[in-house]
Each structure stands twice: as structure tokens, then as C-alpha cells.
Amino acid sequence: MEKEVLISLKGTQNLKGEEPQIIELVTTGTMRKQEEGFLISYQESEMTGLEGVVTTFEVEKNRISLRREGAVRSEMVFEEGHKNESLYDVGFGALLLGVTAKQVRSDLSECGGIFHFSYDIEVEHIPMGYNTYHVEVHEPLKT
Image (cartoon, rainbow, N blue to C red; front, side, top):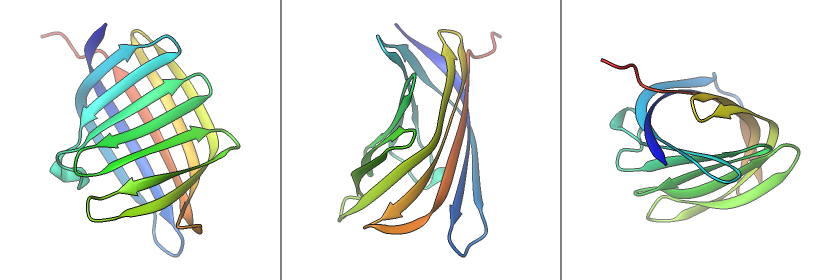
């Protein structure tokens, strides 16, 4: 069963030689229980630079997948201690991304909760930096 949720996301991008960039977003989305975990989805906005894109997190016990569909298409898989490669398609071309998860944590239930992951990222086999995501999922307040 799918239900509406409130999603609070904080992402920190630490690219080599640059000041960290922090993105904080609070939005509504959906949450659906699956056999092995949960699907959390939301529409990106102009504020994130990904307007027209649907972002979905598939959160399992020791694995988190981040999928984007729309103007940008990608799927990154985060498993602690493992490197995963995928294509990041921006419509007019694609880049090879490599992600090596340093930490993957999840404390989600049907009522919501928190998940967090951090990872090293490389583009076309060139190390680019270190990123983190911290996501809180709550049932919306009743009015």
C-alpha cells in the first residue's frame, strides 16, 4: 500500500578543491512497503535543478538504490564497502559514475523513520569527492 509522506533530505557534496555544497529539501512524496524494504519517491523541483525528474530511493536493510527518471536518468546502488558503476544520462549524453558506499544505515518502518548513506564518487574513473545523504520520512501532519 502506498501512502503520502513528508520527506526531509539533506545532501552534502564534497568535491575536491571546492567548498562543500549542502542541499536541504522538504517535500511531499510517497512511501510503499515492499518485501525487502521500502520505496520512497518524490518529484524534484526547479530548486534542485532537476525539475521534471522523479527521484526514488529503494531502501533495504544493507542496500540503498537511488533512481532518477525523467529529464535525467540514472540508478546508483549503495552497498557498504562495494563499488557500483552506472550511467548518468542527461539526455544529450551519459557519464559513467562509480560510487563506493562508506556507510549505509536505515531505520525505516511503516510509520517512517531515517536512512543515511555516504559514498565516494568518481566520474569516468576519476575520483571527484565524497557525498552524504540524510533522509527523514514522516507521516504528514493531520489538519
